[in-house]
Image (cartoon, rainbow, N blue to C red; front, side, top):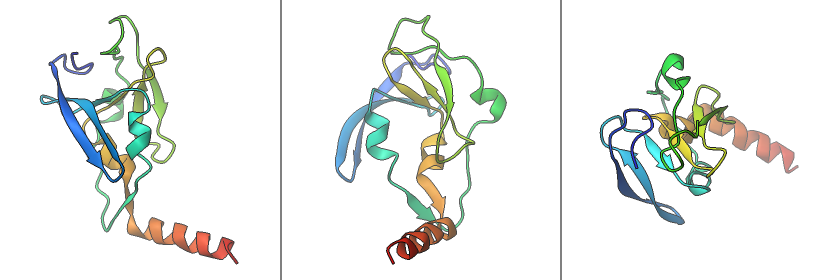
Length: 130
């Protein structure tokens, strides 16, 4: 498979994350990652609290560029969807094979959360239990 962003050949990379273990296809040139159907859902629910959240994601112009699915026929265009937890991350989604392309920095952006937000969520959860 070739990268939908820069057309370089994708390399297989093993992901081991808590209870999940699977392989993804990553681009050693631009740093993007291809997730086959349901692979991203195994790891994107994990939130990593961080003191200072610094996003290193592509700009809107780059995120809105039309990309083709690396897994399907090269004419299958990836659809654009905002990530529900981080609206600044635009996911490229294949309606045919259900694969997902994330540009460099987007996975970290959807997984990291400022520790104040995390504490606020825990506080709301504790209040809701009363």
